[in-house]
Amino acid sequence: MGMPQRFDLLVVGGGVIGLSVAWRAARGGLRAAVMDPAPASGASHAAAGMLAPVSEVAYTEEPLLRLGLASLDRWPSFAAELAADAGREAGDLDYREGGTLDVAFGADDMAALEEIAAFATGLGLPARRLTGRECRRLEPMLAPSVRGGMLAERDAWVDPRKVTAALLTALERRGVTLLRTRAAALETSAGRVTGVRPATGGTVGADRVVLATGAWSGGPGGAGAPAAIEGLPPGILPPVRPVKGQIMRLRSPEPILGRCVRGTVHGSHVYLVPRADGELVVGATQEEMGFDTRVTAGGLWELLRDARELLPGVTELELSDAVAGLRPGTPDNLPVIGPAGPPGLWLATGHHRNGVLLAPLTADLCAGDGDPGLLKICSPLRFQEHR
Ligand code: FAD
Image (cartoon, rainbow, N blue to C red; front, side):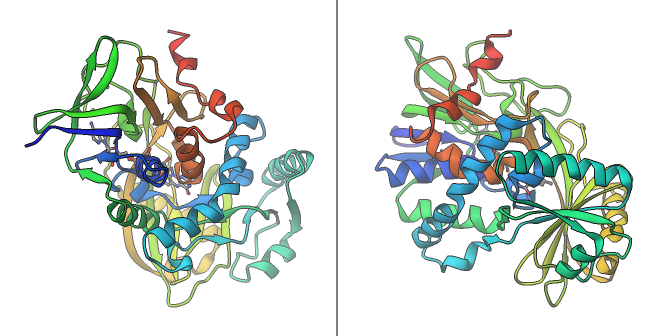
């Protein structure tokens, strides 16, 4: 690696989380670096970009809702500052506010939506119940069989690929070093983390190392798992597991939806996210398949079969992209953010289904800015205590 290097902050992992943490630190005046052999290629490349704390959350998950709302509040300024820092127009990240429309087909779905709507309104969140006719008035392309719905009016959405591209540009413009190599081991001295040994050799020194390696944060895994980062004291890494999600992008000449639409079909959830240029994202499967990232005929078939129930015209569209990503899942569905034990080491991982939504909050928490109560919810120590 040539000359020894030393940074205030070294972020390992360049997905939406690691890049946001590094960008926030650089804006705060820290000398930061990011280490990743393939930045912006993991779950963040697959993600749909729904910023949907209200419609996403089951009513039992109040801590996750608190985190989601705190991060959603940060999104407008995060998007504006990021676009400006990357030298782009404000609208270039495709950040949009228009709510999520959750639709129901049967009595069971309606009852489930009623419960979520009651939970949300009980917390003072706008969640409007709609008849089937009102749903179609909002979204005329919806299937006639849609019986009713709920509009989570505060939800928003963004294009995650544009966000990570803007983050990489903004980091470069701020002089953040991007080290395109895998972190092989943590360096420690007298019990303190002092840097990282890259797979290419040498040492990169840092006062603080943040592990933001997404689905690869869980230490030694099963078959097909990549090499774990060595040098960590036992029991430090959280129980993060990969949750596979297949997702596709379709193309139409004009946007055919005005907002995100979700529904439950045949017991599985499907959602549609529109982009200003006519792209329509259809997602996503949830599979416990280890580190498998194959796109399968069956996975895409299920998505299209379910999407067609919501929006019959969907099968006419051109298929432009299909990928599988690995969500960093945790046992309690909450992220893992904060000091991890040995001085000098922080974790920023385990964002599961909500990493894009939670990126601005995560970056703030890692910069020491944010409600300590929220940081406590995310503490890595909650898993270490139970070992
Ligand atoms: P990743 O983006 O996976 O990045 C981790 C990075 O770590 C990778 O670039 C990898 O190369 C690097 N890495 C791993 N090991 C090492 C090492 N040893 N050294 C150096 N680098 C390493 N979230 C939402 O908020 N809204 C959505 O609508 C949404 N939709 C989704 C749809 C799908 C199909 C999937 C799969 C996920 C979705 N998510 C969504 C979840 C979201 O994508 C994740 O929570 C988020 O991308 C996690 O970001 P990350 O930076 O932690 O992980």
